[in-house]
Image (cartoon, rainbow, N blue to C red; front, side, top):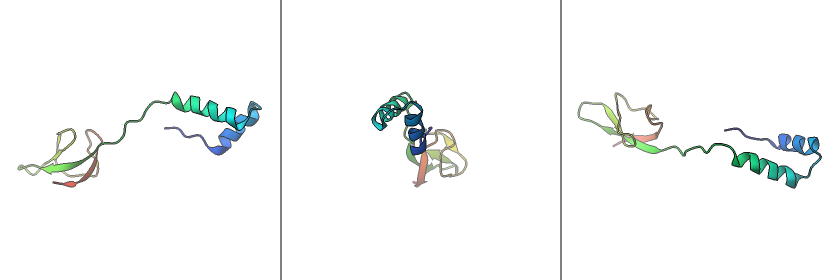
Length: 80
């Protein structure tokens, strides 16, 4: 995700000799055209009988518990 700084907004207003309102509307238009970022899933590891872990979000088996599922990217909050 790209961010625009206050300094960049000021440069835009000076470059185009426009008001802060016009610059804000330009920024809003630019922001609306950015791709949407999906919220991160939150899950937990499920300990299987064979000692491996299974993600509660994508149900893929993994040999160890980590902070994030390497398959779906879900943030893991412990083992259940």
